[in-house]
Length: 53
Image 1 (cartoon, rainbow, N blue to C red):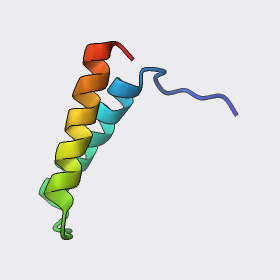
Image 2: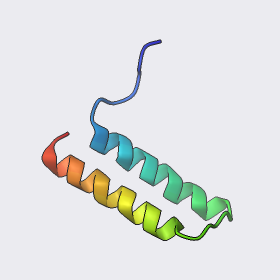
Image 3: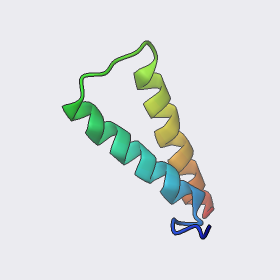
Image 4: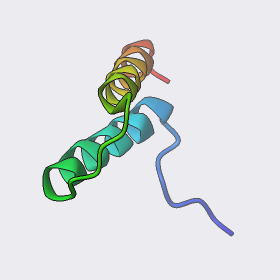
């Protein structure tokens, strides 16, 4: 099976973060540390993008 997505991990994490943040506006799902998880995902994506990975 051929991978169609990006090889840049930072862009992949950014895409996941954008989809998750956008979906939360429509779906009222909530759990304990959702804000912390989304923040950590955003930080990881930003660091990887700055490193060029």
